Amino acid sequence: REAAMSWLDYNTVSRSQYLSTVLSHLRIDALSEVIQREWFQGLPPNDKSVVVQGLYKSMPRFFKPRLGMTKEEMIIIIEAAFESPGCYSTICYSPQAEKVYKICNPPSDVHKIGTVVTPDNDIFIAGGQVPIKTTKSNHSKPGKLQATFRAVNMFYWFDAQQNTWIPKTPMLCVRIKPSLVCCDGYIYAIGGDSIGGELNRRTVERYDTEKDEWTLVSPLPCAFSWSVAVEVNDCIYVMAYNLTYCFIPRSGIWVEMAKRQTSRCFASAAAFDGKIFYLGGLQTDNSGMLRLPTLDGSSVAVEVYDVHKNEWYMAANIPGKRFADPCVRAVVISNSLCVFTRETHLNEKAKYAIYQYDMDLDQWFIRQQISERVL
Image 1 (cartoon, rainbow, N blue to C red):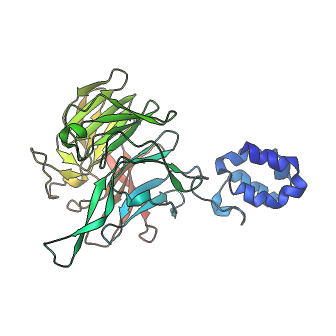
Image 2 (image 1 turned 90 degrees about the horizontal axis):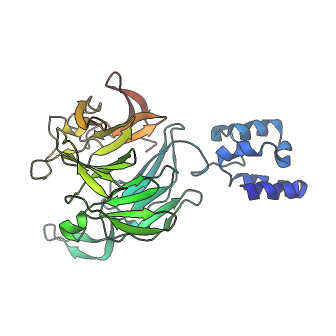
Image 3 (image 1 turned 120 degrees about the vertical axis):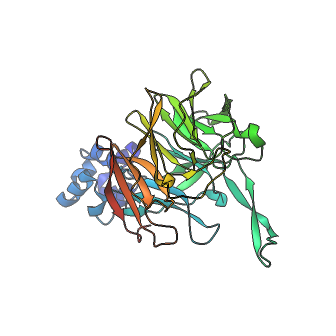
């Protein structure tokens, strides 16, 4: 952006005709830095006010906002399924603007990927599986074709300015739905399903963003599928079933922590205010097998882990139907713990909402109803 401003300053009179094009490539949060520039002083008073405020809803016509230009907090859901099997999309929703930004889908029709957002707001996806062009007959349904898939070790960074996925050095192991977490400047890929058996599911890799390279680190104590990982105080906590393990990167040691009261997988987790929140998911039995959603409300259950006390306790359930098996994603919005959830049964008309948690009252409050037309 400094180069763009210098270019405008060099010959403001002849280059003012390109003002709209230049502004369309500047981030909104950077515009406050240019108010002393000569080309800015030449703007009409109304346009000056709009540029300073950086509010895309009232921008001049030449200023078309897009993802990568705003400073909003987004909820990005990658590989959200359409009604047609095998079709996926990427949804980027702004709670502040109550609108969806267009964002390109992951390349190669890859799905069942791991995702992570770094403290620098960079989005990475890893692993997954891609369809193979050849198909085989589904003998249970004559005349039907069943797609086959291949596990991959792909790793991509999302360029928000260009709205495209940039390939990076692939992981060392193929992984389906790995847990990705950012810790102390590195990205870790943990576990996941793969064709390598139990030993491969235990592997953990560390990615150096500056060197663009992967390194194997200490493996998990046991093979995990459907796990979720968060970072707290420069340590990584990995959770699946009723187990919790803590990885200390500086020493390369895994430590088993307190067990949860419920055994669940496919859950969502978030670190907030020195605690870990483990939300939703499907209940599993002692052997790790999935159980269908039951009236016990396991799919809307919330457990909280106190890092300092090394103990889990139950918190108020997510306000959803107890048999709904809702889509639940834990997010932190405006320094508040929230959940994005589908409130209705899968066979009912979709109804989504964002709820906010009050830790003092141990209650969830509606923060925003989301129109189905938006999603």
